[in-house]
Image (tube, rainbow, N blue to C red; front, top):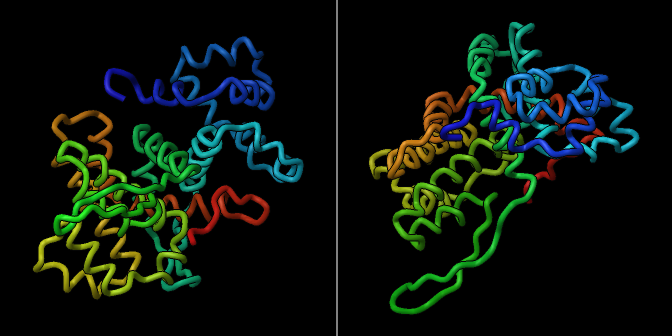
Amino acid sequence: MDGVSVGDGYAEHVTEPDLRLISAATGLPEADAARLRRDPDALERVLADPRVFEAIFGAESLAAREAVIASPFLAFATAVHRATADLAEVRYVAERAAARQKVPVFDAPELRDFLNSAARRLFLAELLTSFTRVTSGRYRVTVGGRSRIRRFSELDPVRLAGMLDAVPEESRPGVYRRLGDVALFLSGVFPDYVAGQAFSPVNLARLLRLTQVPAGERERLAATPDLELMEDLGSRWYRSALALAPVRTSGLTVVGEVADRFRQARRVLNHLADRYLLAPGNPWFVRPA
């Protein structure tokens, strides 16, 4: 995002079918909709238009499967803006007290403040879009003088963290950044999965070692409830990405903000996922295995 506005960041992602959907939903002539890329501020205002949200997430659209004409980015950006509007009018937001159990928490002003940043709204939309296709594969390492093949998956923090020992030093900020993304995505979109899918003691110990959590803090973290553990680790991993990066970019500046406000980011995604992404008949994501 360096050298461009946040609105330009939105303009880079929208597709021609997205612009046609916006035109149809709002009554904006197609020629004017096409020019939204050259007016990024106007584009972001359109993303907050309730008619665009209804065209993607409305009951009629979902029943007719018309939502597939929207790119994932347009869908998630629209959902983030709808969540911003929702949270402007509520006093409390539900929070997980345990797996599949919720209690009201009166922190809506903090969540509104998090979403008041256009850069953070774009961050959440890009984060969700990045997990519509999950990368997995194999890589080769040398252990005890012998070559071995290891597997990794972006949705498995332990396997992903294993790459920190295999990649060159200049690639480690990217691995830490993605680890932070995984922690935020899983705890934000699938909090019940996180709360009910504790790391085994062996895997947690390995994860804490691989991500260089100080030895003096590992015992405390091992006894931390899973959602809180994900928040702690996600914040750490984002900060590690920031600390190890050779250049401080505007994108990394937002990563630092999210690291400091990780719980708010997670809670916003909980609300967004519950209301829009995981509702019956609207399976944007499949639950992790």
